[in-house]
Image (cartoon, rainbow, N blue to C red; front, side, top):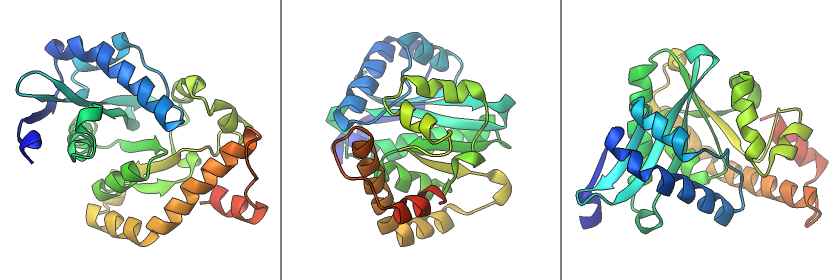
Length: 231
């Protein structure tokens, strides 16, 4: 695609702080459009990630912002998360999100070679990309217990659901890459493809649960609820 040929994906630097406001505005508007939650980040926070060399940005050769993602460190470096993946509306469905995810994953492995890399997502497309990188779905108990991380969820519209479940489950699906397991990306990709319909049902069920909490729909059967919670 001609558009893709004009896109540069690289580690962000000081000069890229000019895009911080645009990035955080797009993060917020995208979350509202999807009707899902997101831990809000300020332009200053995003700019600092750029200055630390812990972010990946996509721009065109003419300087137009295309996409972004950054690294967060938890539990004294035992866990890291690739957070805030966002792509400008004009470049969505072009494959750039996958390229950004791949580069931020590589950067995470370079900076934190022994850390477990995890993510929380409500999107099937992101789950697929993660599986191709070697992530696998896990329970929340396998994620960091760092209180600072979970405090970041307070700005999410689904925070009450997270807390009502004792922080053991929410609308997001948890995924983890554990370098100690030495899983090949092809293994997790094939496993995801085999279970893709199950994950689609899981995401639909979580949306039904959200509607039920808001009084706008019927609750999922208890048998289904038990099965999904104990993934």
